[in-house]
Length: 188
Image 1 (cartoon, rainbow, N blue to C red):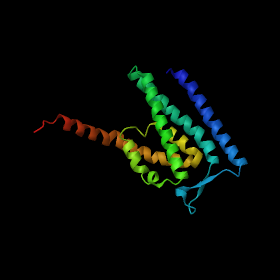
Image 2 (image 1 turned 45 degrees about the vertical axis):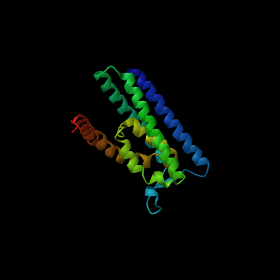
Image 3 (image 1 turned 90 degrees about the horizontal axis):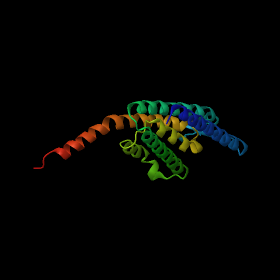
Image 4 (image 1 turned 180 degrees about the vertical axis):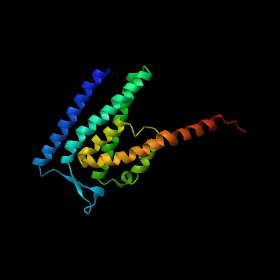
């Protein structure tokens, strides 16, 4: 995708996210007040208002889309498969969005089997998907914003991104090499 075309798409997405978050905040405001979320879901901890999402989400969307654009430009210079990279990025975004929505729904309906194993699910998932990619992070945050606002999912995904980076870049190649060496070893 040309840089100019991506800039137009990026501006549209940022505008759409901004309009959606402020529409949601206004709806909350006129229907009982804007929600606040306690850190670690504990009343003893400070609460973070969803109003902060109105500031964070557009800035975060711009930042993450700029990182995506930069990576796509670097990949396009190295290879001619820009459409393949865009398609892969789209599916990584969808994976993050779906995981964020599933996690939010599980939390809302207190589905403990999923909630108790989220960390393990994310570690296993990080062997197949680069969770540290901006596409995944943006999808995850957008998927959780309705339930948790934007601040808590952002902090959570930053921690998960570090775990995902270590797993995908360092642990995964070791396991793949071990698997390949076991395939090549002669049978006795």
